[in-house]
Image (cartoon, rainbow, N blue to C red; front, side, top):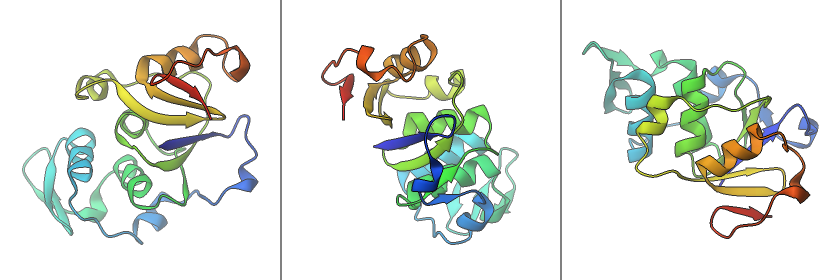
Amino acid sequence: MLRIIDSNFDDVSNYNVEHNVEKLFDTIVLKGTPTERKIIELIEKGHWNDGNSFIDRFGYKLRIEELSTGAKAILCVLNCEDIVVDTIECGLNAISAMICFCKSGNILLRINKLCIDCDIEDSMDDTSIDVRIGNLRFFDLSALLEYVNGGSYRDEDDIEEIKGVVEHV
């Protein structure tokens, strides 16, 4: 599951947080998994070439180091599951892709309201996710958005447990 640590509420000193996405990205080796390829398609509007390069939206071959910080952050989440990746430098598209496509990993996010990039949401085959915030685990994107944006955020006891949609951890 993707675990979201909310820096507005959670004590981040309890976690192994990496604030420098570029530094962390330099430590990973991309394998060209279907999810890695999907991220490059969604964020860069390009496609995977090999472990050292990708083809950008204009058809140019670029070094993998030239990916956007948002794409690098997502790829770090996918490949460094024991590290909490800070999303401070990520745009809405990258945060949306993390929530929609990362089935594991950890992110540090400053949550006030949560919205999902429509292009990212439309690219999902279904709205199933696997996201944990606090002691709640969400398996449905709509349920997560309703929880965060519906006025009861952080009132975990007021949330009804619905198997396969929202569960208390």
